[in-house]
Length: 594
Image (cartoon, rainbow, N blue to C red; front, side, top):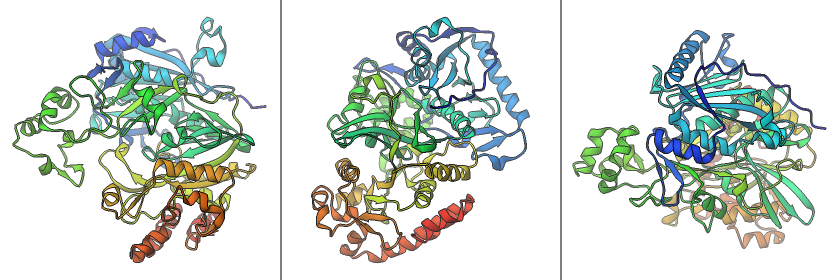
Protein backbone atom coordinates (compact mmCIF):
# COMPACT_ATOMS: atom_id res chain seq x y z
CA UNK A 1 0.00 0.00 0.00
CA UNK A 2 1.52 3.31 -1.06
CA UNK A 3 1.95 5.63 1.88
CA UNK A 4 0.52 9.11 1.43
CA UNK A 5 2.85 12.04 1.89
CA UNK A 6 2.81 14.33 4.90
CA UNK A 7 2.36 17.65 3.13
CA UNK A 8 3.17 21.20 4.17
CA UNK A 9 0.28 23.66 4.18
CA UNK A 10 0.31 27.17 2.76
CA UNK A 11 -1.25 30.07 4.68
CA UNK A 12 -3.97 32.18 3.10
CA UNK A 13 -3.04 34.07 -0.06
CA UNK A 14 -1.21 37.20 1.15
CA UNK A 15 -2.56 39.57 -1.52
CA UNK A 16 -5.65 41.72 -1.09
CA UNK A 17 -6.48 41.71 -4.79
CA UNK A 18 -9.19 40.39 -7.07
CA UNK A 19 -8.55 36.75 -7.94
CA UNK A 20 -9.68 34.86 -11.00
CA UNK A 21 -9.60 31.27 -9.77
CA UNK A 22 -9.36 28.39 -12.24
CA UNK A 23 -10.56 30.33 -15.29
CA UNK A 24 -11.44 28.34 -18.39
CA UNK A 25 -8.98 27.89 -21.23
CA UNK A 26 -11.22 30.12 -23.36
CA UNK A 27 -11.02 32.91 -20.77
CA UNK A 28 -7.26 32.54 -20.54
CA UNK A 29 -6.98 32.82 -24.32
CA UNK A 30 -8.87 36.11 -24.21
CA UNK A 31 -6.70 37.40 -21.36
CA UNK A 32 -3.48 36.35 -23.09
CA UNK A 33 -4.36 38.08 -26.34
CA UNK A 34 -5.29 41.21 -24.40
CA UNK A 35 -2.59 41.37 -21.70
CA UNK A 36 0.40 39.19 -22.69
CA UNK A 37 2.99 41.07 -24.76
CA UNK A 38 3.89 39.54 -28.13
CA UNK A 39 1.21 36.88 -27.87
CA UNK A 40 -0.65 36.21 -31.13
CA UNK A 41 -3.04 33.76 -32.68
CA UNK A 42 -1.74 31.39 -35.37
CA UNK A 43 -3.52 30.39 -38.55
CA UNK A 44 -4.60 27.21 -36.72
CA UNK A 45 -6.23 29.21 -33.94
CA UNK A 46 -3.57 28.33 -31.37
CA UNK A 47 -1.73 30.94 -29.31
CA UNK A 48 2.00 31.65 -29.72
CA UNK A 49 4.05 33.78 -27.34
CA UNK A 50 7.44 35.20 -28.27
CA UNK A 51 9.31 35.55 -24.98
CA UNK A 52 12.35 37.54 -23.95
CA UNK A 53 13.82 34.38 -22.48
CA UNK A 54 14.38 31.49 -24.86
CA UNK A 55 15.20 29.00 -22.10
CA UNK A 56 15.25 28.74 -18.32
CA UNK A 57 17.75 31.06 -16.65
CA UNK A 58 19.42 28.89 -14.01
CA UNK A 59 21.98 31.61 -13.27
CA UNK A 60 19.22 33.84 -11.91
CA UNK A 61 17.74 31.21 -9.59
CA UNK A 62 18.48 31.61 -5.88
CA UNK A 63 17.57 29.45 -2.89
CA UNK A 64 16.99 31.24 0.39
CA UNK A 65 19.74 30.13 2.77
CA UNK A 66 18.66 30.89 6.33
CA UNK A 67 21.26 28.66 8.00
CA UNK A 68 24.33 30.06 6.26
CA UNK A 69 25.17 26.71 4.63
CA UNK A 70 25.29 27.27 0.86
CA UNK A 71 26.94 23.88 0.38
CA UNK A 72 23.58 22.30 1.21
CA UNK A 73 22.20 23.50 -2.13
CA UNK A 74 23.04 22.99 -5.80
CA UNK A 75 21.86 26.48 -6.80
CA UNK A 76 23.15 29.92 -5.95
CA UNK A 77 21.83 31.13 -2.61
CA UNK A 78 20.49 34.40 -1.30
CA UNK A 79 20.29 35.71 2.24
CA UNK A 80 16.91 35.87 3.95
CA UNK A 81 16.97 39.66 4.31
CA UNK A 82 17.70 40.37 0.64
CA UNK A 83 15.19 37.74 -0.43
CA UNK A 84 12.48 39.28 1.73
CA UNK A 85 13.11 42.71 0.23
CA UNK A 86 12.55 41.30 -3.25
CA UNK A 87 9.48 39.36 -2.13
CA UNK A 88 8.00 42.50 -0.57
CA UNK A 89 8.66 44.47 -3.76
CA UNK A 90 6.95 41.80 -5.82
CA UNK A 91 3.98 41.81 -3.44
CA UNK A 92 3.68 45.59 -3.87
CA UNK A 93 3.67 45.10 -7.65
CA UNK A 94 0.89 42.51 -7.34
CA UNK A 95 -1.18 44.87 -5.20
CA UNK A 96 -0.68 47.65 -7.75
CA UNK A 97 -1.89 45.36 -10.54
CA UNK A 98 -4.98 44.56 -8.49
CA UNK A 99 -5.67 41.17 -10.07
CA UNK A 100 -4.26 37.66 -9.99
CA UNK A 101 -5.00 34.58 -12.02
CA UNK A 102 -4.97 31.61 -9.64
CA UNK A 103 -4.62 28.06 -10.91
CA UNK A 104 -5.37 25.30 -8.40
CA UNK A 105 -4.26 21.80 -9.25
CA UNK A 106 -1.89 18.98 -8.50
CA UNK A 107 1.59 17.91 -9.41
CA UNK A 108 1.00 14.19 -9.78
CA UNK A 109 -2.03 11.98 -9.38
CA UNK A 110 -2.80 9.30 -6.82
CA UNK A 111 -1.72 9.06 -3.18
CA UNK A 112 1.51 11.04 -3.71
CA UNK A 113 -0.11 13.96 -5.54
CA UNK A 114 0.86 17.40 -4.24
CA UNK A 115 -1.62 20.33 -4.32
CA UNK A 116 -0.18 23.52 -5.77
CA UNK A 117 -1.46 27.09 -6.03
CA UNK A 118 0.02 28.94 -9.03
CA UNK A 119 -0.52 32.75 -8.99
CA UNK A 120 0.03 34.98 -12.04
CA UNK A 121 -0.43 38.63 -12.85
CA UNK A 122 -2.45 39.20 -16.02
CA UNK A 123 0.54 39.58 -18.35
CA UNK A 124 1.31 35.93 -17.59
CA UNK A 125 -2.08 34.66 -18.77
CA UNK A 126 -0.43 32.45 -21.39
CA UNK A 127 1.79 30.86 -18.73
CA UNK A 128 -1.21 30.30 -16.48
CA UNK A 129 -2.99 28.56 -19.34
CA UNK A 130 -0.03 26.32 -20.10
CA UNK A 131 0.38 25.42 -16.45
CA UNK A 132 -3.33 24.62 -16.17
CA UNK A 133 -2.91 22.12 -19.01
CA UNK A 134 -0.01 20.34 -17.27
CA UNK A 135 -1.56 20.30 -13.79
CA UNK A 136 -3.88 17.50 -12.75
CA UNK A 137 -7.32 18.96 -12.01
CA UNK A 138 -8.67 18.75 -8.50
CA UNK A 139 -11.54 16.45 -9.41
CA UNK A 140 -9.17 13.82 -10.78
CA UNK A 141 -7.27 13.66 -7.50
CA UNK A 142 -9.93 14.58 -4.93
CA UNK A 143 -13.02 13.20 -6.61
CA UNK A 144 -16.03 14.71 -8.42
CA UNK A 145 -17.09 16.84 -5.43
CA UNK A 146 -13.72 18.63 -5.18
CA UNK A 147 -15.25 22.02 -5.98
CA UNK A 148 -17.36 21.87 -2.82
CA UNK A 149 -14.28 21.89 -0.60
CA UNK A 150 -11.68 24.54 0.14
CA UNK A 151 -8.35 24.02 -1.60
CA UNK A 152 -5.34 23.62 0.68
CA UNK A 153 -2.11 24.00 -1.30
CA UNK A 154 1.18 22.51 -0.17
CA UNK A 155 3.20 24.63 -2.63
CA UNK A 156 2.71 28.18 -3.87
CA UNK A 157 4.24 29.93 -6.86
CA UNK A 158 3.93 33.66 -7.61
CA UNK A 159 4.84 34.72 -11.16
CA UNK A 160 5.17 38.34 -12.31
CA UNK A 161 6.89 38.62 -15.73
CA UNK A 162 6.75 42.42 -15.93
CA UNK A 163 8.03 43.13 -12.43
CA UNK A 164 11.73 43.86 -13.01
CA UNK A 165 13.84 43.42 -9.88
CA UNK A 166 17.16 45.16 -9.32
CA UNK A 167 19.09 41.96 -9.83
CA UNK A 168 21.53 40.61 -12.43
CA UNK A 169 19.72 39.98 -15.69
CA UNK A 170 16.79 42.04 -14.35
CA UNK A 171 15.09 38.84 -13.20
CA UNK A 172 15.14 36.54 -10.21
CA UNK A 173 13.65 33.20 -9.24
CA UNK A 174 13.62 33.10 -5.45
CA UNK A 175 13.08 29.62 -4.00
CA UNK A 176 11.99 29.22 -0.37
CA UNK A 177 12.47 25.50 0.30
CA UNK A 178 11.73 25.93 4.00
CA UNK A 179 8.19 27.08 3.23
CA UNK A 180 7.74 25.63 -0.29
CA UNK A 181 7.09 28.94 -2.08
CA UNK A 182 8.75 30.13 -5.30
CA UNK A 183 8.71 33.75 -6.45
CA UNK A 184 9.42 34.38 -10.16
CA UNK A 185 10.24 37.97 -11.11
CA UNK A 186 11.03 39.39 -14.54
CA UNK A 187 11.18 36.07 -16.42
CA UNK A 188 8.57 35.38 -19.11
CA UNK A 189 9.37 31.79 -20.14
CA UNK A 190 6.91 29.03 -19.26
CA UNK A 191 9.67 26.65 -18.19
CA UNK A 192 10.21 28.73 -15.04
CA UNK A 193 6.63 28.02 -13.94
CA UNK A 194 6.87 24.34 -14.76
CA UNK A 195 10.22 23.82 -13.08
CA UNK A 196 9.30 26.09 -10.18
CA UNK A 197 6.85 23.54 -8.83
CA UNK A 198 8.98 20.54 -9.83
CA UNK A 199 12.03 21.97 -8.04
CA UNK A 200 10.06 22.16 -4.80
CA UNK A 201 8.71 18.68 -5.48
CA UNK A 202 12.28 17.37 -5.76
CA UNK A 203 13.04 18.65 -2.26
CA UNK A 204 9.81 17.32 -0.75
CA UNK A 205 10.09 13.87 -2.33
CA UNK A 206 13.74 13.54 -1.33
CA UNK A 207 12.79 14.35 2.25
CA UNK A 208 10.16 11.61 2.01
CA UNK A 209 12.53 8.90 0.75
CA UNK A 210 12.07 9.23 -3.03
CA UNK A 211 14.06 10.77 -5.85
CA UNK A 212 12.57 13.03 -8.53
CA UNK A 213 14.28 12.22 -11.80
CA UNK A 214 14.51 14.26 -15.00
CA UNK A 215 13.09 11.34 -16.94
CA UNK A 216 10.35 10.51 -19.36
CA UNK A 217 8.50 7.24 -18.96
CA UNK A 218 6.42 4.93 -21.10
CA UNK A 219 4.53 1.71 -20.73
CA UNK A 220 5.49 -1.00 -23.20
CA UNK A 221 3.15 -3.89 -23.91
CA UNK A 222 4.39 -7.08 -25.48
CA UNK A 223 3.66 -10.78 -25.27
CA UNK A 224 4.90 -10.91 -21.69
CA UNK A 225 2.60 -8.14 -20.43
CA UNK A 226 3.21 -4.55 -19.38
CA UNK A 227 6.55 -3.02 -18.38
CA UNK A 228 7.50 0.54 -17.50
CA UNK A 229 10.60 2.22 -18.93
CA UNK A 230 12.19 5.43 -17.62
CA UNK A 231 14.35 7.68 -19.85
CA UNK A 232 16.64 10.36 -18.38
CA UNK A 233 18.06 13.19 -20.45
CA UNK A 234 18.86 16.87 -20.50
CA UNK A 235 16.65 19.10 -22.64
CA UNK A 236 17.32 18.46 -26.32
CA UNK A 237 18.69 14.92 -25.97
CA UNK A 238 15.52 13.33 -27.35
CA UNK A 239 13.76 12.39 -24.13
CA UNK A 240 10.30 13.36 -25.39
CA UNK A 241 10.92 11.81 -28.81
CA UNK A 242 12.10 8.55 -27.25
CA UNK A 243 9.16 8.53 -24.86
CA UNK A 244 6.70 8.76 -27.74
CA UNK A 245 8.44 6.34 -30.12
CA UNK A 246 7.11 2.80 -30.47
CA UNK A 247 8.59 -0.41 -29.06
CA UNK A 248 6.97 -3.79 -28.54
CA UNK A 249 3.42 -4.55 -29.59
CA UNK A 250 2.23 -1.21 -28.20
CA UNK A 251 3.71 1.80 -26.44
CA UNK A 252 1.73 4.00 -24.08
CA UNK A 253 3.35 7.30 -23.06
CA UNK A 254 3.41 7.96 -19.32
CA UNK A 255 5.47 11.18 -18.87
CA UNK A 256 7.87 13.14 -21.02
CA UNK A 257 9.91 14.98 -18.40
CA UNK A 258 9.78 14.09 -14.69
CA UNK A 259 8.98 11.05 -12.56
CA UNK A 260 9.62 10.18 -8.93
CA UNK A 261 11.38 6.93 -8.11
CA UNK A 262 10.57 5.01 -4.93
CA UNK A 263 11.82 1.83 -3.24
CA UNK A 264 11.15 -1.35 -5.17
CA UNK A 265 11.10 0.48 -8.49
CA UNK A 266 7.71 2.09 -7.89
CA UNK A 267 7.24 5.35 -9.79
CA UNK A 268 4.85 8.27 -9.42
CA UNK A 269 4.11 10.83 -12.12
CA UNK A 270 4.16 14.62 -12.10
CA UNK A 271 2.38 16.15 -15.11
CA UNK A 272 -0.83 15.78 -17.10
CA UNK A 273 0.80 16.50 -20.45
CA UNK A 274 4.14 17.37 -22.02
CA UNK A 275 6.22 20.43 -22.86
CA UNK A 276 7.76 19.45 -26.19
CA UNK A 277 10.44 21.01 -28.35
CA UNK A 278 9.15 21.99 -31.79
CA UNK A 279 12.36 22.47 -33.78
CA UNK A 280 12.35 20.12 -36.77
CA UNK A 281 8.88 18.87 -35.88
CA UNK A 282 7.24 16.82 -38.64
CA UNK A 283 4.19 14.61 -38.73
CA UNK A 284 5.98 11.64 -40.25
CA UNK A 285 8.62 11.46 -37.50
CA UNK A 286 6.72 12.68 -34.42
CA UNK A 287 3.00 12.44 -35.27
CA UNK A 288 1.58 12.79 -31.74
CA UNK A 289 3.60 15.89 -30.89
CA UNK A 290 3.05 17.41 -34.32
CA UNK A 291 -0.72 16.99 -34.26
CA UNK A 292 -0.92 18.31 -30.71
CA UNK A 293 1.19 21.33 -31.61
CA UNK A 294 -0.91 22.41 -34.59
CA UNK A 295 -4.18 21.86 -32.74
CA UNK A 296 -6.40 24.91 -32.43
CA UNK A 297 -6.28 24.47 -28.65
CA UNK A 298 -2.49 24.43 -28.44
CA UNK A 299 -0.31 26.88 -26.56
CA UNK A 300 3.08 27.37 -28.15
CA UNK A 301 6.07 29.48 -27.24
CA UNK A 302 8.90 30.98 -29.28
CA UNK A 303 7.73 29.28 -32.49
CA UNK A 304 8.44 31.12 -35.74
CA UNK A 305 5.31 32.24 -37.63
CA UNK A 306 5.34 33.37 -41.23
CA UNK A 307 3.45 36.44 -42.43
CA UNK A 308 0.19 34.46 -42.59
CA UNK A 309 0.54 33.02 -39.09
CA UNK A 310 1.72 29.56 -40.17
CA UNK A 311 4.18 27.90 -37.77
CA UNK A 312 7.48 26.99 -39.41
CA UNK A 313 9.32 24.40 -37.33
CA UNK A 314 12.43 24.49 -39.54
CA UNK A 315 13.00 28.24 -39.75
CA UNK A 316 16.36 29.33 -38.41
CA UNK A 317 18.14 32.05 -40.41
CA UNK A 318 16.23 35.34 -40.71
CA UNK A 319 16.56 37.51 -43.78
CA UNK A 320 16.45 41.33 -43.56
CA UNK A 321 12.84 41.11 -44.80
CA UNK A 322 11.96 38.66 -42.02
CA UNK A 323 13.52 40.95 -39.45
CA UNK A 324 11.74 43.98 -40.85
CA UNK A 325 8.37 42.22 -40.51
CA UNK A 326 9.19 41.14 -36.94
CA UNK A 327 10.94 44.38 -35.94
CA UNK A 328 8.63 45.38 -33.09
CA UNK A 329 8.59 41.88 -31.62
CA UNK A 330 12.36 41.46 -31.81
CA UNK A 331 13.07 44.84 -30.21
CA UNK A 332 10.34 44.32 -27.64
CA UNK A 333 11.88 41.02 -26.58
CA UNK A 334 15.41 42.28 -26.16
CA UNK A 335 17.09 42.93 -29.51
CA UNK A 336 18.99 46.21 -29.81
CA UNK A 337 17.08 48.59 -32.09
CA UNK A 338 20.20 49.99 -33.78
CA UNK A 339 21.42 46.48 -34.65
CA UNK A 340 17.99 45.48 -35.95
CA UNK A 341 17.76 48.54 -38.16
CA UNK A 342 21.33 48.10 -39.45
CA UNK A 343 20.49 44.53 -40.50
CA UNK A 344 17.25 45.60 -42.17
CA UNK A 345 19.08 48.31 -44.08
CA UNK A 346 21.69 45.85 -45.31
CA UNK A 347 24.51 47.64 -43.52
CA UNK A 348 25.33 44.37 -41.70
CA UNK A 349 25.16 40.98 -43.40
CA UNK A 350 24.25 37.63 -41.86
CA UNK A 351 27.75 36.26 -42.43
CA UNK A 352 29.22 39.26 -40.58
CA UNK A 353 27.50 38.40 -37.30
CA UNK A 354 27.17 34.59 -37.32
CA UNK A 355 30.22 32.43 -36.71
CA UNK A 356 29.88 28.66 -37.18
CA UNK A 357 26.13 28.81 -36.57
CA UNK A 358 26.34 30.93 -33.41
CA UNK A 359 25.39 34.65 -33.49
CA UNK A 360 27.74 37.18 -31.98
CA UNK A 361 26.63 39.01 -28.86
CA UNK A 362 23.90 41.50 -29.69
CA UNK A 363 22.92 39.70 -32.90
CA UNK A 364 20.94 36.72 -31.62
CA UNK A 365 17.86 38.02 -33.43
CA UNK A 366 19.20 37.03 -36.88
CA UNK A 367 18.68 33.36 -35.99
CA UNK A 368 15.34 32.14 -34.67
CA UNK A 369 15.67 30.07 -31.51
CA UNK A 370 15.54 26.30 -31.96
CA UNK A 371 13.99 26.04 -28.49
CA UNK A 372 10.40 26.60 -29.58
CA UNK A 373 7.97 24.70 -27.37
CA UNK A 374 4.42 23.42 -27.24
CA UNK A 375 2.15 22.19 -24.48
CA UNK A 376 0.24 18.99 -25.21
CA UNK A 377 -2.35 17.62 -22.72
CA UNK A 378 -2.32 13.89 -22.03
CA UNK A 379 -5.90 13.82 -23.29
CA UNK A 380 -4.52 14.64 -26.76
CA UNK A 381 -1.88 11.90 -26.58
CA UNK A 382 -2.99 8.82 -28.45
CA UNK A 383 -3.00 5.64 -26.35
CA UNK A 384 -1.61 7.27 -23.22
CA UNK A 385 -1.15 4.98 -20.24
CA UNK A 386 -3.51 5.02 -17.26
CA UNK A 387 -1.35 7.03 -14.89
CA UNK A 388 -2.97 5.63 -11.76
CA UNK A 389 -2.14 2.02 -12.77
CA UNK A 390 1.57 1.85 -13.56
CA UNK A 391 3.83 -1.15 -13.23
CA UNK A 392 7.10 -0.84 -11.33
CA UNK A 393 10.17 0.26 -13.26
CA UNK A 394 11.50 -2.48 -15.55
CA UNK A 395 14.07 -0.50 -17.52
CA UNK A 396 15.87 2.80 -16.84
CA UNK A 397 18.17 4.56 -19.27
CA UNK A 398 19.95 7.83 -19.88
CA UNK A 399 20.31 9.68 -23.19
CA UNK A 400 23.60 11.22 -24.28
CA UNK A 401 23.35 13.35 -27.41
CA UNK A 402 27.02 13.02 -28.28
CA UNK A 403 28.27 15.44 -30.92
CA UNK A 404 31.58 16.66 -32.29
CA UNK A 405 34.70 15.14 -33.85
CA UNK A 406 35.29 13.09 -30.68
CA UNK A 407 31.71 11.79 -30.42
CA UNK A 408 32.37 8.12 -29.65
CA UNK A 409 29.59 7.04 -27.29
CA UNK A 410 28.10 3.72 -28.45
CA UNK A 411 24.55 3.72 -29.74
CA UNK A 412 23.51 1.49 -26.83
CA UNK A 413 25.27 0.54 -23.59
CA UNK A 414 24.05 -1.78 -20.86
CA UNK A 415 25.41 -1.24 -17.35
CA UNK A 416 26.77 -4.22 -15.46
CA UNK A 417 26.07 -3.09 -11.90
CA UNK A 418 23.98 -0.58 -9.92
CA UNK A 419 27.22 1.27 -9.08
CA UNK A 420 28.14 1.66 -12.72
CA UNK A 421 24.63 2.87 -13.53
CA UNK A 422 24.68 5.33 -10.62
CA UNK A 423 27.99 6.73 -11.86
CA UNK A 424 26.85 7.36 -15.41
CA UNK A 425 23.53 8.81 -14.27
CA UNK A 426 25.45 11.10 -11.95
CA UNK A 427 27.66 12.21 -14.84
CA UNK A 428 24.66 13.16 -16.99
CA UNK A 429 26.82 13.61 -20.08
CA UNK A 430 25.57 15.15 -23.32
CA UNK A 431 26.26 17.97 -25.78
CA UNK A 432 24.54 21.27 -25.12
CA UNK A 433 21.72 22.11 -27.52
CA UNK A 434 19.55 25.15 -28.19
CA UNK A 435 17.71 24.55 -24.90
CA UNK A 436 20.90 25.83 -23.23
CA UNK A 437 20.88 29.07 -25.21
CA UNK A 438 24.03 30.06 -27.13
CA UNK A 439 26.31 27.73 -25.19
CA UNK A 440 27.50 24.67 -27.08
CA UNK A 441 29.87 21.78 -26.47
CA UNK A 442 30.07 18.84 -24.08
CA UNK A 443 28.54 19.18 -20.65
CA UNK A 444 27.84 17.14 -17.53
CA UNK A 445 24.87 17.61 -15.23
CA UNK A 446 24.24 15.31 -12.26
CA UNK A 447 21.36 13.00 -13.17
CA UNK A 448 20.68 15.43 -16.06
CA UNK A 449 18.83 17.52 -13.51
CA UNK A 450 20.26 21.02 -13.00
CA UNK A 451 17.12 22.00 -11.06
CA UNK A 452 17.55 19.47 -8.23
CA UNK A 453 17.81 22.06 -5.44
CA UNK A 454 19.72 20.14 -2.76
CA UNK A 455 23.38 19.12 -2.93
CA UNK A 456 23.87 17.03 -6.07
CA UNK A 457 25.82 14.32 -4.23
CA UNK A 458 22.55 13.36 -2.52
CA UNK A 459 21.16 12.16 -5.85
CA UNK A 460 23.83 9.50 -6.34
CA UNK A 461 23.49 8.29 -2.77
CA UNK A 462 19.69 8.12 -2.90
CA UNK A 463 19.71 6.41 -6.30
CA UNK A 464 22.15 3.78 -5.02
CA UNK A 465 19.86 3.13 -2.06
CA UNK A 466 16.82 2.81 -4.31
CA UNK A 467 18.56 0.69 -6.95
CA UNK A 468 19.48 -1.83 -4.26
CA UNK A 469 15.75 -2.45 -3.79
CA UNK A 470 14.95 -2.96 -7.48
CA UNK A 471 13.97 -6.29 -8.93
CA UNK A 472 15.09 -7.27 -12.44
CA UNK A 473 15.53 -3.71 -13.72
CA UNK A 474 17.90 -3.20 -16.66
CA UNK A 475 19.85 0.06 -16.76
CA UNK A 476 21.37 1.47 -19.93
CA UNK A 477 22.68 4.47 -21.88
CA UNK A 478 21.84 5.47 -25.45
CA UNK A 479 23.57 7.95 -27.76
CA UNK A 480 20.97 10.04 -29.63
CA UNK A 481 23.51 12.25 -31.39
CA UNK A 482 26.41 11.43 -33.69
CA UNK A 483 29.47 9.26 -34.14
CA UNK A 484 32.62 11.10 -35.18
CA UNK A 485 31.16 14.53 -35.89
CA UNK A 486 28.02 16.61 -36.23
CA UNK A 487 25.37 17.47 -38.83
CA UNK A 488 27.90 19.10 -41.14
CA UNK A 489 30.22 16.11 -40.80
CA UNK A 490 27.35 13.81 -41.70
CA UNK A 491 26.66 15.88 -44.82
CA UNK A 492 30.30 15.43 -45.85
CA UNK A 493 30.18 11.69 -45.15
CA UNK A 494 32.58 12.08 -42.23
CA UNK A 495 30.16 11.27 -39.38
CA UNK A 496 27.14 9.11 -38.62
CA UNK A 497 23.81 10.30 -37.18
CA UNK A 498 21.96 8.13 -34.69
CA UNK A 499 18.46 8.48 -36.09
CA UNK A 500 15.11 7.96 -34.41
CA UNK A 501 14.63 4.68 -36.25
CA UNK A 502 18.01 3.46 -34.96
CA UNK A 503 17.06 4.31 -31.37
CA UNK A 504 13.73 2.51 -31.67
CA UNK A 505 15.39 -0.58 -33.16
CA UNK A 506 17.98 -0.74 -30.36
CA UNK A 507 15.38 -0.37 -27.62
CA UNK A 508 13.10 -2.97 -29.20
CA UNK A 509 15.92 -5.49 -29.39
CA UNK A 510 17.02 -4.81 -25.81
CA UNK A 511 13.52 -5.05 -24.38
CA UNK A 512 12.89 -8.25 -26.32
CA UNK A 513 16.01 -9.84 -24.88
CA UNK A 514 17.32 -10.31 -28.42
CA UNK A 515 20.80 -8.78 -28.01
CA UNK A 516 23.99 -10.72 -27.46
CA UNK A 517 26.29 -8.44 -25.50
CA UNK A 518 30.06 -8.02 -25.39
CA UNK A 519 32.18 -6.22 -22.79
CA UNK A 520 33.64 -2.92 -23.96
CA UNK A 521 37.42 -3.25 -23.51
CA UNK A 522 37.88 0.38 -22.47
CA UNK A 523 34.98 1.08 -20.10
CA UNK A 524 33.72 -2.29 -18.89
CA UNK A 525 30.08 -1.71 -19.72
CA UNK A 526 28.31 -3.96 -22.22
CA UNK A 527 27.85 -3.10 -25.88
CA UNK A 528 26.21 -4.91 -28.78
CA UNK A 529 28.41 -7.73 -30.09
CA UNK A 530 28.41 -6.89 -33.79
CA UNK A 531 30.13 -10.20 -34.64
CA UNK A 532 27.46 -12.38 -33.04
CA UNK A 533 25.15 -14.00 -35.64
CA UNK A 534 22.22 -13.57 -33.23
CA UNK A 535 22.51 -9.78 -33.66
CA UNK A 536 22.22 -9.92 -37.47
CA UNK A 537 18.61 -8.65 -37.49
CA UNK A 538 19.58 -5.59 -35.41
CA UNK A 539 22.56 -4.89 -37.67
CA UNK A 540 20.21 -4.74 -40.64
CA UNK A 541 18.52 -1.79 -38.94
CA UNK A 542 21.47 -0.10 -37.18
CA UNK A 543 25.00 0.32 -38.62
CA UNK A 544 27.64 -1.63 -36.73
CA UNK A 545 29.76 1.53 -36.46
CA UNK A 546 27.01 3.13 -34.34
CA UNK A 547 26.85 0.10 -32.09
CA UNK A 548 30.66 -0.03 -31.75
CA UNK A 549 32.15 3.42 -32.53
CA UNK A 550 35.68 2.08 -32.12
CA UNK A 551 35.16 0.44 -35.53
CA UNK A 552 34.15 3.75 -37.09
CA UNK A 553 37.36 5.42 -35.91
CA UNK A 554 39.48 2.44 -36.95
CA UNK A 555 38.00 2.32 -40.44
CA UNK A 556 38.26 6.12 -40.81
CA UNK A 557 41.96 6.16 -39.90
CA UNK A 558 41.18 8.23 -36.80
CA UNK A 559 42.09 5.73 -34.08
CA UNK A 560 44.38 8.25 -32.38
CA UNK A 561 41.30 10.45 -31.77
CA UNK A 562 39.47 7.53 -30.20
CA UNK A 563 42.41 6.61 -27.96
CA UNK A 564 42.71 10.22 -26.78
CA UNK A 565 38.96 10.31 -26.11
CA UNK A 566 39.09 7.17 -23.94
CA UNK A 567 41.93 8.54 -21.79
CA UNK A 568 40.31 11.94 -21.44
CA UNK A 569 36.88 10.52 -20.56
CA UNK A 570 38.27 8.33 -17.80
CA UNK A 571 40.18 11.23 -16.23
CA UNK A 572 37.37 13.77 -16.56
CA UNK A 573 34.70 11.41 -15.26
CA UNK A 574 36.73 10.49 -12.21
CA UNK A 575 37.40 14.15 -11.41
CA UNK A 576 33.73 15.09 -11.86
CA UNK A 577 32.47 12.36 -9.53
CA UNK A 578 35.13 13.14 -6.92
CA UNK A 579 34.06 16.80 -6.98
CA UNK A 580 30.62 15.74 -5.75
CA UNK A 581 31.90 13.34 -3.06
CA UNK A 582 30.37 10.32 -4.77
CA UNK A 583 30.97 6.96 -3.06
CA UNK A 584 34.28 5.31 -4.03
CA UNK A 585 32.56 2.15 -5.31
CA UNK A 586 30.62 4.25 -7.83
CA UNK A 587 33.72 6.14 -8.94
CA UNK A 588 35.66 2.91 -9.39
CA UNK A 589 32.88 1.36 -11.47
CA UNK A 590 33.16 4.28 -13.92
CA UNK A 591 36.83 5.20 -13.84
CA UNK A 592 38.23 1.67 -13.96
CA UNK A 593 35.58 0.31 -16.30
CA UNK A 594 34.54 -2.47 -13.97
